[in-house]
Length: 306
Image (cartoon, rainbow, N blue to C red):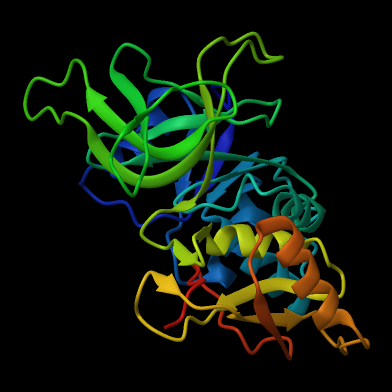
């Protein structure tokens, strides 16, 4: 974003830590249109009348708005929005899900990630869409740990683990080795944009993670695999563990929503189940459910339902 551009936001960020992210829009010279959550009609009206260059949403709300616009005969692809900035939950970096959002909005999608305890929007993608850059080098120190043992892991290219952050220059209430519960994959080396710092992609939340016969399964990873079956499926899923424990016995039940007016072709559930097995090394039972039967969200999606 550049000074003079217009941006519409959908976060209800009042005077607390996360509000600082929205205050930064004015600080860099943008015209900020705060709409908030809970009223898609008002948001679309603001986009039509005020013609923003970008929109800021959670990935779930961005996807919901694509469906809402289609149902209300709104040409979202023809709007003024050229960039969709998603944050607040994992998903924006999933290739299939991102492609779905870019097709629905007719815009470039990039994601950001932060945590109120340490700093908001600490990580953000550049135009290369190749992982989120750390925008707080010298202020926040990142580490990786094994989420089960707490042991430190080497921050190397391709490594994955739970992200741990430490304040370096916070004078009031610095936090040291704060566990974010975000499970990330690390990319090192110079990005095509020229930046040289570490980049991450968030795979999911470690507190959402399930362990099936020793295999770590993230619901967001399940969604990514299922989304590759579009346009036969909507991309909405629910993982339905049989117990409230982290450790689950196979097969893991997964509900997959069909596309609008879609019918399940013979073998679709088997194909999804086999793809989940080969990609995530997990045995599942796949239930195909009608379009619209899995709830939508104007904030964050619920991928696990106990």
